[in-house]
Picture 1 (cartoon, helix red, strand yellow):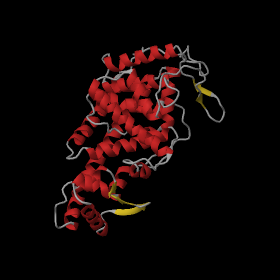
Picture 2 (cartoon, one colour):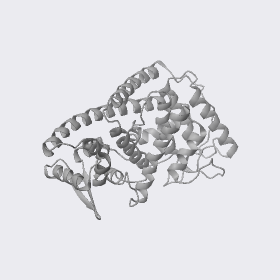
Picture 3 (cartoon, helix red, strand yellow):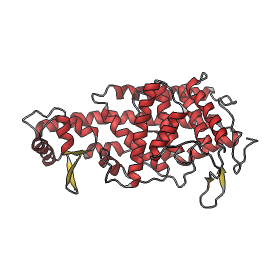
Picture 4 (tube, one colour):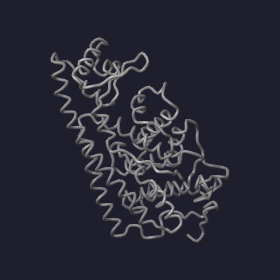
Length: 371
Protein backbone atom coordinates (compact mmCIF):
# COMPACT_ATOMS: atom_id res chain seq x y z
CA UNK A 1 0.00 0.00 0.00
CA UNK A 2 1.18 3.56 -0.67
CA UNK A 3 1.36 4.55 3.04
CA UNK A 4 3.34 1.46 4.04
CA UNK A 5 7.09 1.20 4.43
CA UNK A 6 8.67 -1.93 5.90
CA UNK A 7 11.00 0.03 8.18
CA UNK A 8 8.37 2.49 9.47
CA UNK A 9 5.74 1.72 12.16
CA UNK A 10 2.52 1.02 10.28
CA UNK A 11 0.35 3.41 12.30
CA UNK A 12 -1.80 3.92 9.21
CA UNK A 13 -2.89 0.27 9.19
CA UNK A 14 -6.42 0.55 7.74
CA UNK A 15 -9.45 -0.22 9.86
CA UNK A 16 -11.67 -3.19 9.17
CA UNK A 17 -13.53 -4.21 7.10
CA UNK A 18 -11.20 -4.15 4.08
CA UNK A 19 -12.03 -1.70 1.35
CA UNK A 20 -11.45 -4.40 -1.26
CA UNK A 21 -14.13 -6.90 -2.24
CA UNK A 22 -12.88 -9.95 -0.36
CA UNK A 23 -15.89 -12.21 -0.85
CA UNK A 24 -15.49 -12.91 -4.55
CA UNK A 25 -17.30 -15.80 -6.21
CA UNK A 26 -14.18 -17.93 -5.90
CA UNK A 27 -13.70 -17.01 -2.23
CA UNK A 28 -17.30 -17.87 -1.37
CA UNK A 29 -16.95 -21.19 -3.20
CA UNK A 30 -13.88 -21.99 -1.08
CA UNK A 31 -15.77 -20.90 2.04
CA UNK A 32 -18.66 -23.25 1.27
CA UNK A 33 -16.26 -26.17 0.80
CA UNK A 34 -14.40 -25.34 4.01
CA UNK A 35 -17.63 -25.01 6.01
CA UNK A 36 -18.87 -28.36 4.72
CA UNK A 37 -15.64 -30.04 5.81
CA UNK A 38 -15.74 -28.27 9.17
CA UNK A 39 -19.38 -29.27 9.74
CA UNK A 40 -18.62 -32.92 8.97
CA UNK A 41 -15.67 -32.91 11.36
CA UNK A 42 -17.65 -31.15 14.09
CA UNK A 43 -20.52 -33.63 13.80
CA UNK A 44 -18.10 -36.56 14.02
CA UNK A 45 -16.50 -35.05 17.12
CA UNK A 46 -19.91 -34.52 18.75
CA UNK A 47 -20.95 -38.10 18.04
CA UNK A 48 -17.92 -39.63 19.75
CA UNK A 49 -18.85 -41.67 22.81
CA UNK A 50 -16.09 -39.97 24.77
CA UNK A 51 -15.35 -36.53 23.32
CA UNK A 52 -12.51 -36.02 25.80
CA UNK A 53 -10.42 -38.28 23.53
CA UNK A 54 -10.21 -35.35 21.10
CA UNK A 55 -10.45 -32.55 23.66
CA UNK A 56 -7.35 -33.86 25.43
CA UNK A 57 -5.29 -34.99 22.45
CA UNK A 58 -5.81 -32.50 19.61
CA UNK A 59 -5.08 -29.35 21.66
CA UNK A 60 -1.76 -30.89 22.68
CA UNK A 61 -0.84 -31.45 19.04
CA UNK A 62 -1.94 -27.89 18.31
CA UNK A 63 0.19 -26.66 21.20
CA UNK A 64 3.24 -28.50 19.89
CA UNK A 65 2.81 -27.22 16.33
CA UNK A 66 1.92 -23.65 17.29
CA UNK A 67 4.96 -23.48 19.54
CA UNK A 68 7.12 -24.89 16.76
CA UNK A 69 6.04 -21.98 14.53
CA UNK A 70 7.74 -19.78 17.13
CA UNK A 71 10.85 -22.02 17.15
CA UNK A 72 10.00 -23.37 20.60
CA UNK A 73 11.01 -26.96 20.05
CA UNK A 74 9.45 -29.77 22.04
CA UNK A 75 8.24 -33.20 20.99
CA UNK A 76 4.78 -34.71 21.08
CA UNK A 77 6.22 -37.49 23.26
CA UNK A 78 7.30 -34.97 25.87
CA UNK A 79 3.98 -33.14 25.73
CA UNK A 80 1.83 -36.22 26.21
CA UNK A 81 4.11 -37.65 28.87
CA UNK A 82 3.90 -34.44 30.93
CA UNK A 83 0.32 -33.49 30.03
CA UNK A 84 -0.98 -34.14 33.54
CA UNK A 85 2.17 -33.32 35.50
CA UNK A 86 4.61 -30.79 34.07
CA UNK A 87 6.79 -30.52 37.17
CA UNK A 88 9.68 -32.42 35.54
CA UNK A 89 9.09 -31.16 32.00
CA UNK A 90 11.62 -29.09 30.06
CA UNK A 91 11.06 -25.31 29.79
CA UNK A 92 10.04 -25.67 26.13
CA UNK A 93 7.51 -28.36 27.01
CA UNK A 94 6.07 -26.27 29.83
CA UNK A 95 5.72 -23.31 27.48
CA UNK A 96 3.91 -25.45 24.90
CA UNK A 97 1.62 -26.84 27.60
CA UNK A 98 0.68 -23.27 28.51
CA UNK A 99 -0.61 -22.89 24.96
CA UNK A 100 -3.00 -25.78 25.62
CA UNK A 101 -4.05 -24.15 28.90
CA UNK A 102 -4.65 -20.85 27.08
CA UNK A 103 -6.77 -22.64 24.47
CA UNK A 104 -8.92 -24.30 27.16
CA UNK A 105 -9.25 -21.10 29.19
CA UNK A 106 -10.14 -19.12 26.07
CA UNK A 107 -12.76 -21.72 25.14
CA UNK A 108 -14.36 -21.32 28.56
CA UNK A 109 -14.26 -17.52 28.25
CA UNK A 110 -16.14 -17.69 24.95
CA UNK A 111 -18.68 -20.14 26.36
CA UNK A 112 -19.34 -17.79 29.30
CA UNK A 113 -19.35 -14.47 27.43
CA UNK A 114 -20.31 -15.42 23.89
CA UNK A 115 -17.93 -12.79 22.49
CA UNK A 116 -14.20 -12.25 21.99
CA UNK A 117 -12.70 -9.05 23.36
CA UNK A 118 -9.35 -7.34 23.65
CA UNK A 119 -9.28 -8.63 27.22
CA UNK A 120 -9.70 -12.16 25.86
CA UNK A 121 -6.53 -11.62 23.82
CA UNK A 122 -4.70 -10.16 26.82
CA UNK A 123 -5.74 -13.05 29.05
CA UNK A 124 -4.68 -15.67 26.50
CA UNK A 125 -1.29 -14.07 25.97
CA UNK A 126 -0.81 -13.73 29.74
CA UNK A 127 -1.40 -17.47 30.19
CA UNK A 128 1.02 -18.31 27.39
CA UNK A 129 3.74 -16.03 28.77
CA UNK A 130 3.03 -16.82 32.45
CA UNK A 131 2.79 -13.18 33.52
CA UNK A 132 0.31 -10.34 33.07
CA UNK A 133 0.51 -8.90 29.58
CA UNK A 134 -0.56 -5.46 28.43
CA UNK A 135 -0.27 -3.66 25.12
CA UNK A 136 3.13 -2.62 23.82
CA UNK A 137 4.23 0.82 24.95
CA UNK A 138 7.67 1.24 23.40
CA UNK A 139 9.18 1.04 19.96
CA UNK A 140 11.84 -1.20 18.57
CA UNK A 141 9.67 -4.15 17.52
CA UNK A 142 11.63 -5.88 14.76
CA UNK A 143 10.15 -8.29 12.23
CA UNK A 144 12.51 -9.23 9.47
CA UNK A 145 15.36 -11.35 8.19
CA UNK A 146 17.44 -12.45 11.21
CA UNK A 147 20.57 -12.89 9.06
CA UNK A 148 20.61 -9.60 7.12
CA UNK A 149 18.61 -7.56 9.68
CA UNK A 150 16.52 -6.27 6.80
CA UNK A 151 13.09 -5.21 8.10
CA UNK A 152 10.11 -6.92 6.51
CA UNK A 153 7.35 -5.30 8.54
CA UNK A 154 7.16 -2.83 11.43
CA UNK A 155 3.86 -2.92 13.36
CA UNK A 156 2.08 0.14 14.74
CA UNK A 157 3.64 1.87 17.75
CA UNK A 158 2.19 3.77 20.70
CA UNK A 159 -0.19 2.46 23.35
CA UNK A 160 -3.10 4.67 22.25
CA UNK A 161 -2.65 3.72 18.58
CA UNK A 162 -2.51 0.00 19.34
CA UNK A 163 -5.48 0.23 21.72
CA UNK A 164 -7.59 1.99 19.10
CA UNK A 165 -6.74 -0.55 16.41
CA UNK A 166 -7.40 -3.47 18.73
CA UNK A 167 -10.79 -1.97 19.71
CA UNK A 168 -11.66 -1.76 16.01
CA UNK A 169 -10.53 -5.39 15.60
CA UNK A 170 -12.82 -6.43 18.50
CA UNK A 171 -15.79 -4.65 16.90
CA UNK A 172 -15.21 -6.45 13.61
CA UNK A 173 -14.74 -9.87 15.23
CA UNK A 174 -18.07 -9.63 17.05
CA UNK A 175 -20.22 -7.71 14.57
CA UNK A 176 -19.51 -9.85 11.52
CA UNK A 177 -20.56 -7.07 9.15
CA UNK A 178 -22.13 -9.63 6.84
CA UNK A 179 -19.02 -11.71 6.19
CA UNK A 180 -19.02 -15.49 6.17
CA UNK A 181 -17.63 -16.53 9.59
CA UNK A 182 -14.62 -18.28 8.04
CA UNK A 183 -13.80 -15.24 5.91
CA UNK A 184 -14.22 -13.03 8.96
CA UNK A 185 -11.81 -15.22 10.92
CA UNK A 186 -9.19 -14.95 8.15
CA UNK A 187 -9.53 -11.16 7.94
CA UNK A 188 -9.39 -10.78 11.72
CA UNK A 189 -6.33 -13.01 11.98
CA UNK A 190 -4.40 -10.85 9.53
CA UNK A 191 -5.39 -7.70 11.40
CA UNK A 192 -4.39 -9.07 14.80
CA UNK A 193 -0.98 -10.16 13.53
CA UNK A 194 -0.51 -6.82 11.75
CA UNK A 195 -1.36 -4.89 14.93
CA UNK A 196 1.06 -7.14 16.83
CA UNK A 197 -0.27 -5.75 20.11
CA UNK A 198 2.05 -7.47 22.60
CA UNK A 199 5.80 -7.55 23.08
CA UNK A 200 5.77 -11.35 22.67
CA UNK A 201 3.30 -14.19 22.13
CA UNK A 202 1.33 -12.56 19.31
CA UNK A 203 1.52 -15.52 16.94
CA UNK A 204 0.37 -18.09 19.46
CA UNK A 205 -2.33 -15.79 20.81
CA UNK A 206 -3.60 -15.18 17.29
CA UNK A 207 -3.76 -18.89 16.55
CA UNK A 208 -5.77 -19.53 19.73
CA UNK A 209 -8.12 -16.71 18.72
CA UNK A 210 -8.69 -18.36 15.32
CA UNK A 211 -10.23 -21.41 16.98
CA UNK A 212 -12.21 -19.29 19.44
CA UNK A 213 -13.73 -17.23 16.62
CA UNK A 214 -15.08 -20.42 15.07
CA UNK A 215 -16.42 -21.53 18.45
CA UNK A 216 -18.12 -18.15 18.95
CA UNK A 217 -19.64 -18.40 15.46
CA UNK A 218 -21.18 -21.80 16.31
CA UNK A 219 -19.03 -23.69 13.80
CA UNK A 220 -17.08 -25.65 16.43
CA UNK A 221 -18.39 -27.30 19.58
CA UNK A 222 -14.91 -28.15 20.89
CA UNK A 223 -11.49 -26.49 20.34
CA UNK A 224 -10.18 -29.33 18.19
CA UNK A 225 -9.26 -27.71 14.87
CA UNK A 226 -5.53 -28.29 14.48
CA UNK A 227 -4.67 -25.36 12.13
CA UNK A 228 -1.05 -24.96 13.20
CA UNK A 229 -0.06 -28.19 11.43
CA UNK A 230 -1.15 -26.66 8.10
CA UNK A 231 0.74 -23.45 8.90
CA UNK A 232 3.90 -25.39 9.77
CA UNK A 233 3.64 -27.32 6.50
CA UNK A 234 3.07 -24.12 4.50
CA UNK A 235 4.86 -21.61 6.70
CA UNK A 236 6.68 -19.66 4.01
CA UNK A 237 3.42 -19.17 2.14
CA UNK A 238 1.69 -18.15 5.38
CA UNK A 239 4.09 -15.26 5.90
CA UNK A 240 4.14 -14.38 2.21
CA UNK A 241 0.33 -14.13 2.14
CA UNK A 242 0.28 -12.02 5.31
CA UNK A 243 2.82 -9.62 3.84
CA UNK A 244 0.90 -9.61 0.56
CA UNK A 245 -2.09 -8.03 2.28
CA UNK A 246 0.10 -5.33 3.82
CA UNK A 247 2.17 -4.54 0.73
CA UNK A 248 -0.35 -5.11 -2.06
CA UNK A 249 -3.81 -5.39 -0.51
CA UNK A 250 -3.89 -9.06 -1.64
CA UNK A 251 -6.85 -10.00 0.56
CA UNK A 252 -8.39 -12.70 -1.62
CA UNK A 253 -5.11 -14.65 -1.78
CA UNK A 254 -4.73 -14.49 2.00
CA UNK A 255 -8.33 -15.48 2.70
CA UNK A 256 -8.06 -18.32 0.19
CA UNK A 257 -5.00 -19.62 2.02
CA UNK A 258 -6.83 -19.63 5.36
CA UNK A 259 -9.93 -21.26 3.90
CA UNK A 260 -7.77 -24.03 2.47
CA UNK A 261 -6.17 -24.40 5.90
CA UNK A 262 -9.59 -24.92 7.47
CA UNK A 263 -10.77 -27.34 4.79
CA UNK A 264 -7.64 -29.49 4.75
CA UNK A 265 -7.37 -29.54 8.54
CA UNK A 266 -11.03 -30.46 9.02
CA UNK A 267 -10.77 -33.27 6.46
CA UNK A 268 -7.62 -34.57 8.14
CA UNK A 269 -9.21 -34.44 11.58
CA UNK A 270 -12.30 -36.25 10.32
CA UNK A 271 -10.12 -39.08 9.01
CA UNK A 272 -8.34 -39.13 12.38
CA UNK A 273 -11.65 -39.41 14.24
CA UNK A 274 -12.72 -42.35 12.06
CA UNK A 275 -9.37 -44.07 12.64
CA UNK A 276 -9.66 -43.52 16.39
CA UNK A 277 -13.08 -45.15 16.39
CA UNK A 278 -11.73 -48.17 14.56
CA UNK A 279 -8.82 -48.48 16.97
CA UNK A 280 -11.13 -48.13 19.98
CA UNK A 281 -13.30 -51.00 18.72
CA UNK A 282 -10.21 -53.12 18.13
CA UNK A 283 -8.79 -52.44 21.57
CA UNK A 284 -12.15 -53.00 23.24
CA UNK A 285 -12.01 -56.63 22.08
CA UNK A 286 -8.34 -56.91 23.05
CA UNK A 287 -9.07 -55.67 26.56
CA UNK A 288 -11.94 -58.14 26.85
CA UNK A 289 -9.65 -61.01 25.85
CA UNK A 290 -6.83 -59.94 28.17
CA UNK A 291 -9.07 -59.28 31.18
CA UNK A 292 -11.53 -62.13 30.95
CA UNK A 293 -12.71 -61.54 34.51
CA UNK A 294 -14.42 -58.29 33.45
CA UNK A 295 -15.11 -55.33 35.70
CA UNK A 296 -12.84 -53.01 33.73
CA UNK A 297 -15.46 -50.32 33.04
CA UNK A 298 -13.80 -47.07 32.00
CA UNK A 299 -10.41 -48.57 31.20
CA UNK A 300 -10.78 -48.03 27.45
CA UNK A 301 -11.56 -44.37 28.02
CA UNK A 302 -8.44 -43.94 30.15
CA UNK A 303 -6.24 -45.42 27.44
CA UNK A 304 -7.61 -42.99 24.85
CA UNK A 305 -7.84 -39.80 26.88
CA UNK A 306 -4.03 -39.70 26.77
CA UNK A 307 -1.60 -42.03 24.94
CA UNK A 308 0.51 -42.08 28.12
CA UNK A 309 -1.10 -43.72 31.15
CA UNK A 310 -0.01 -44.08 34.76
CA UNK A 311 -1.34 -46.57 37.28
CA UNK A 312 -2.90 -43.74 39.28
CA UNK A 313 -4.89 -42.64 36.20
CA UNK A 314 -6.59 -46.05 36.08
CA UNK A 315 -7.15 -46.03 39.84
CA UNK A 316 -8.85 -42.61 39.73
CA UNK A 317 -10.94 -43.15 36.60
CA UNK A 318 -12.02 -46.72 37.27
CA UNK A 319 -12.25 -46.46 41.08
CA UNK A 320 -10.07 -49.51 41.67
CA UNK A 321 -7.15 -50.30 43.95
CA UNK A 322 -3.50 -50.00 42.91
CA UNK A 323 -3.06 -53.81 42.71
CA UNK A 324 -6.10 -54.10 40.41
CA UNK A 325 -4.98 -51.23 38.17
CA UNK A 326 -1.46 -52.70 38.02
CA UNK A 327 -2.80 -56.13 37.15
CA UNK A 328 -4.95 -54.76 34.33
CA UNK A 329 -2.15 -52.74 32.75
CA UNK A 330 0.37 -55.55 33.13
CA UNK A 331 -2.03 -57.97 31.41
CA UNK A 332 -2.37 -55.57 28.48
CA UNK A 333 1.40 -55.17 28.40
CA UNK A 334 1.86 -58.95 28.27
CA UNK A 335 -0.59 -59.19 25.35
CA UNK A 336 1.26 -56.49 23.42
CA UNK A 337 -1.66 -54.08 23.62
CA UNK A 338 0.47 -51.51 25.48
CA UNK A 339 4.16 -50.76 25.93
CA UNK A 340 5.81 -49.32 29.02
CA UNK A 341 8.93 -47.59 30.29
CA UNK A 342 10.28 -46.29 33.57
CA UNK A 343 10.52 -42.58 34.36
CA UNK A 344 12.38 -42.51 37.66
CA UNK A 345 10.33 -44.56 40.12
CA UNK A 346 7.21 -44.28 37.97
CA UNK A 347 5.99 -46.83 35.45
CA UNK A 348 4.33 -45.33 32.37
CA UNK A 349 2.23 -47.30 29.89
CA UNK A 350 1.89 -46.19 26.28
CA UNK A 351 -0.98 -46.76 23.88
CA UNK A 352 1.49 -46.77 20.98
CA UNK A 353 -1.04 -47.33 18.22
CA UNK A 354 -3.06 -44.34 19.41
CA UNK A 355 0.07 -42.21 19.61
CA UNK A 356 1.12 -43.18 16.09
CA UNK A 357 -2.37 -42.40 14.81
CA UNK A 358 -2.32 -38.93 16.37
CA UNK A 359 1.03 -37.89 14.91
CA UNK A 360 0.97 -39.75 11.60
CA UNK A 361 0.42 -36.64 9.46
CA UNK A 362 3.90 -35.32 10.22
CA UNK A 363 5.01 -31.72 10.16
CA UNK A 364 7.54 -29.73 8.21
CA UNK A 365 9.32 -26.81 9.85
CA UNK A 366 10.27 -23.82 7.73
CA UNK A 367 13.49 -21.87 8.11
CA UNK A 368 12.23 -18.52 9.37
CA UNK A 369 9.78 -17.12 11.89
CA UNK A 370 8.65 -13.57 11.17
CA UNK A 371 5.60 -12.98 13.34
